[in-house]
Amino acid sequence: MLYQSTRNDTLTATASMAILNGIAPDGGLYMLRDYSALELPISDFKSLSAQALSARVLGLLLSDFSQPEIDAIVNSAYHGRFETEELTPLVRVGDAHILELFRGPTSAFKDVALSVLPHLITAARKKNNITDDVLILTATSGDTGKAALCGFADVPGTRIIVFYPEGGVSEVQLSQMITQEGGNVAVCAIRGNFDDAQSAVKAVFAAAKSGCVPNGIRLSSANSINIGRLAPQVMYYFKAYADLMRSGEIAAGERINFVVPTGNFGNILAGYIAKRMGLPIAKLVCASNSNNVLTEFIETGCYNSRRAFVKTASPSMDILISSNLERLLFLLCGCCAQKTALYMDELKQTGSYTIAPDMLDAIKDEFFAGCCTDEKTFGIIGDVYSRFGYLMDTHTAVAYGVMQQFKANADNGCRCVVLSTASPYKFCTSVLRSIGGKIHGSEFDVMDELCARTNIPVPSGLSMLRGKAVLHTDVIDKTDILDYVLKKAGTSVW
Ligand SMILES: *Cc1c(COP(=O)(O)O)cnc(C)c1O
Image (cartoon, rainbow, N blue to C red):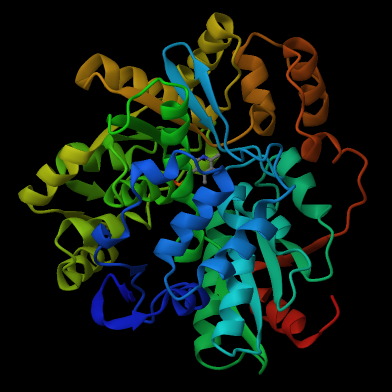
């Protein structure tokens, strides 16, 4: 089965080429038209381990890879690299369940996909006889950078440069990135904010189109517009369902809800794909912080990005243009690329668009949306900790709060699984304050204090950062980014 651009039916690619290209040549996103032939029967997945489930799902979604190829990729991506071989444990908290997606090497949910993507890229190079090195350029506001560095470090045939805004990431996130080891990794600060870093990276991609990148190098991207980052996320929805069946909490075929803290719409879209592959999902609940452009969209059908950008305590969800929503629109308008292209064009020209009423009805059938302010979020962290002894990060708490709104306003009686996207220790200042602690010293001191108060172990990847050698000190102006990339691309030893 071929992937195609969401904006043009004739721009098709195999799964492996879609992964190498990252984005379709017309700026659309690669997507399949039909998932009904990819059904994974419940009777099959109940007995599968997390890794086996991941391999089954990827084998179905990435059809030009053989199953033995995928099995090997999944094994090298995950084996021994997560805190548990279960990868994404499901924990009961009160009458809800929390699916912990942050047990990977960098304590962010992005590890689930970014552990797999480098291996997919390597295999895709071989399959398509591409001998060029793939150079990954990533702009990050914190979490993606480290997870991508960790995934790509020392993977043959790949190199990665991460750009972050100078002074714009937390102390823990900074320390995670600048201590990264590996002979193919570079980390560089940009004088400016995240948007400056991101537009500078986009400018390099545009310049590369005009042929200034040296022979032997191919640029690609590690963010969730790449289907190779989206596909590995579909697995954990099946995994959570299988866990609930195994523990007898649901019967086979019973429908459940998932509540997803959402930014770029990648995580929740993976849930929608799982549903199209036959998983009995009732509602997908889309949780936002005060940047609630998606809440408004799902309620009214009008997507309006012309609003003030709010800096919140859940920074990985501070986003006004949710790229992967384009993929949902494509599916919901009957895979009409022309219609999708019109909406995207309108967004680009005017900053907003309004979908047809039948599409809005279809969205409301499948999704519920809500949002939480920072104040509410802090209250939820404190409340859940005092009632159940369970400590959540700010992003997860946004989702928990929206689950409460869902239950109060639109309950369908089905069980709810909340997706937890980061370790509380990644946002320890907000979390410690929310449970009544006082903030003193550096973020590492706050981490110690949070651990002393809660007795919850600090993930080893975070505690070992203290005192680690700083390996990356480059700082550049955003106008110098192309020179920086070309210089790096021209040297084989970094
Ligand atoms: C990236 C991220 C999100 C948002 O996920 P999307 O796939 O962009 O919707 C939520 N929480 C955390 C901690 C993240 O790092």
